[in-house]
Amino acid sequence: MPHLVSVVANSTLRDRLGPLILVGGIAESLGMPGETLEADEPFEEYRRKAVELLSESIKYASLMDDELRHAVSSLAALLGASKLAKILSNLDCGVECPNCGINIDLLTSDAFA
Image (tube, rainbow, N blue to C red):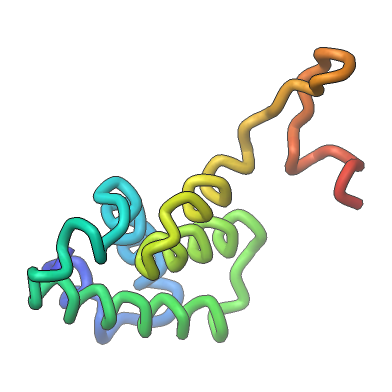
């Protein structure tokens, strides 16, 4: 993770997006940073830098819907909200309606229009 953050620190907003989404995925897989890695000061420094860089990309890069969803998911993971990160990253999965049993694709459904 530190290497990825270092490499993209001077990249364009769009070029840093993919690696930072990967960094967020790594953070999500580790769970809550405060529970597992708080004593690791270098990790905390790079996590803060990744949050800063990813926030800039989200704010200024004019992202497409899927890019934005994955960037916000990664940001949530980096901020310790791993459950929210998982929900956002899995929005393209369908869910079964508990009433009728029909599979609903959350991203294409009219349910949220």
